[in-house]
Image 1 (cartoon, rainbow, N blue to C red):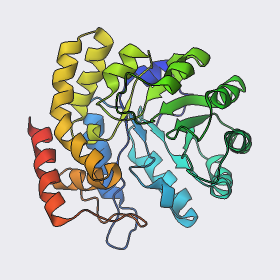
Image 2 (image 1 turned 90 degrees about the vertical axis):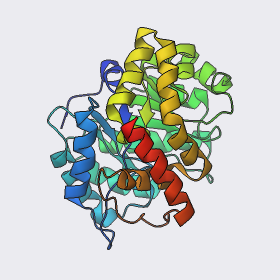
Image 3 (image 1 turned 180 degrees about the horizontal axis):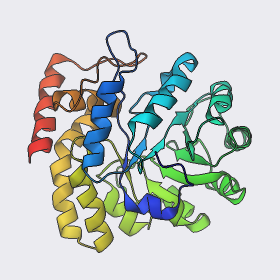
Image 4 (image 1 turned 30 degrees about the vertical axis):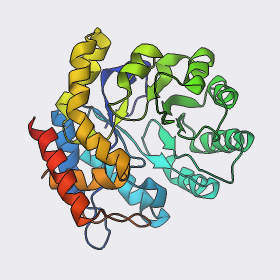
Amino acid sequence: MQTRAVTPDDLARSVIAVPPMARDENLVFQAEENKKIISHIEAGNVSTLLYGGNANFYHIALSEYESILGQLAELAGEDTLVIPAAGPSYGTMMDQADILKETEYPTVMVLPQQGLTTSEGVVTGLRKFAEKVGKPIVLYIKYGDFITVEGAKQLVDDGIVSWIKYAIVRDNPSDDPYLAELVKKVDSSIIVSGIGEQPVIDHLVGFGVNGFTAGCVCIRPELSDELLKTVQAGNIDRAREIQAIFSPLEDLRNGINPVRVLHEAVKLAGIADTGPALPLLSGISDAETELVKQAAMDLLNT
């Protein structure tokens, strides 16, 4: 596992895969199945793994946190960058900080809490967390009322932000006043598009952000890697062709639930047995399963 500090070059070099987490019927972390997911992603020239929402770190038990962090570090390749998540509640992240500060992970993403927050309170809380964990953090902006652009700038100026995952969903990703203001106030080389393959052209070309995170990359990592490279090279026609290949599964994720669909898609595509969803989430219906299986297999084989 890569342990040096994350740089803008790292963000631009690889798609940032956000994989699900495989568990057994008793909801215990399954090293062998998670290794299959990691190896599949690494074989597609993707060398950054972000364990956040798709891995359901929102509901991870503190009692298993240290063990899972240790196993993920061992399962990844020597040159693979692995980034775990903490939070989303303040008390949880501060307890997790005691564990994280003893690890070699170069950064950690803080999951965004919706509700019972203010931007000022988020700035204070993330600053205290970063100070306690002793390493720069990934700021995850998913909700417009989570943190203001000025609040994000304060954290960056304080030197406690490794990079920013920007993931506020817009009907038209090219029309995004928040992101437009963010790239004016914060160096765009540390901002990453955080909503999968679909808004990549708008975000990387239109706003100048530096890379993207994705879930469907876990099915076709080499194709997602090609998308990143074609956009960087300015080959937008080919990039749109690749986006169209990802669209059927992405549309199902948007229509049903991004986390639940990806969890099942990885299993249905035969990549690894991801097991049951960790509560407070659940699986998908039989009818949805048929649709997801077809889309996942089509993506894998197209």
